Structure formats: structure tokens, C-alpha cells
Amino acid sequence: MIIESFSNPKYKYLLSLSKSKNRKKDGVYLMEGRVEIDLAIRSGQRPQIVAFSDAYIDQKEIETIVGRFNPQIIKLSKALFDALSYQNVPMNFIGVFPAFLNDLAMINDDEPIVVLEKVEKPGNLGAILRTCDALGVKNIIATESPVDLFNPNILRNSRGAIFSTTCVFASNEEVLKFLKRRNSQVYCAALTEGSEDYRKVNLQKNNAYVFGSEAHGLSDFWLSSSDQNIIIPMQGEVDSLNVSVSVAIILSHHFNVIDGS
Image (cartoon, rainbow, N blue to C red; front, side):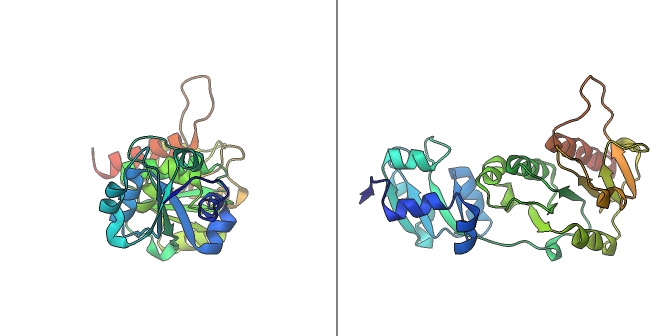
């Protein structure tokens, strides 16, 4: 049976999952996109609900992809699906999955860490997860952040990288204690007097690179806890970069030096 009414309870429930409080209440998140859902399934995620429109994918294909998990399958009209989704493209469908929680104990001690303080834009965090995945960085920690991992903008911009990285949310104090226990060198990206060119610092495999929000930079907590503040020298007229670009530049240098290339 196809659902065509915007007032249908099943449709309204799916729509409600765009809000963090509803996702947290039910312990679920909503993911869309064939590539992203494939990544979720390969990482061990199991859909509880699948919604689709035969304007984009037929039910036989849906059953081939997720049938073994026995989810509730909801068929929507094109109008309802389009109102619910971001990608109105062939093979697109939507899955509802049980939420999961990462913690600091899951961080690998022999790999670098990216710490993001007060990241306020979910799209930025999603882009950083995607960047980290591309560079082979598995450890990302968001401190003092108001966003949650399953924000639709994070999911969309990460392109499924939440499943191939470990993104942990914690307080500044918890993270600093953790970094000290693992003997990480803490390098803070900051426009401060005495900041060193990022290419000149001592590199170890388990370095921690700390980045602030684009609006406010890093707090005194991190600036006073830093082993060395670092900076990307700017050659043009602008004085800063998007935080995801800064992460990519500094991490690329880290791996080039560590790998001896």
C-alpha cells in the first residue's frame, strides 16, 4: 500500500526524526542515499524502517538490499518522499537505524587525533569527517558542541564517513586528561603571537591537532594547554581558511612526514 497523505502517522514519524530531541527519544537516526546506506550496512548497522518511492527505486530492489534484516518497509508517494528527502535521484531511499554511541575508549592510541572545539555548523563537522576518512584519520573528538552526530547536515556532508571514523563528543576537561594519558603532543591551530608554521613542528604518530570554530577560534582552555600553537601561513589577501580545509592541509603534512614521503 502506498502512503499519499501528509497527515499519515508513519510519514509524520519519519518527518519528526529531523529533530534531535525526537531522534534521541527513540534512539534512532535517519539516513538517506544508496551509497550512504550501503556503507552503514557494511559497518554493521541494521535498518529498522525503510521508506522509498517507486519514482526512484522499486520495491524488489529494496528487498534485495535490506530484506534480510526484515525492516518495516514504507512505500511513499513521490510528493511525500520528495518532501522528506534531500536527494531526489535514482536509487535513493531512506533508512531508520538504531543510534550508536562512541566514547574515548574507542580511540586508537597510535594514531593522530583531530579535536574540534565548539563546532557550531553541522555541515562543517560532516565535511571534516569526510576529509578525515579520505586521509585515513579515524579519531575525531568534538568538545563542547551543541550538535549531535546524527544531525541531517552532518550525515549528508560526511557522505557516510560517520561509519568509517570514530567521532566522540566530550568535554574539554575529559579530552585534555585523555590526551595527557596517551602522551599526545597538543598542537592548537591559532592566530596567536608565537604560533609556529605547521610544517616546522615535531611530529609523532599520536599527535593531537586542535581546531576552534570559525566564528570564535579556540578558547583560553586550549590555548593555555597547548604544547605549541601552529599556523598555516597565508600567501594571499585573506587571513583564514574554512576549518575543514585547515584540517586537510595540516593532516596531509602530518602523513607526508610520518610516512617519509
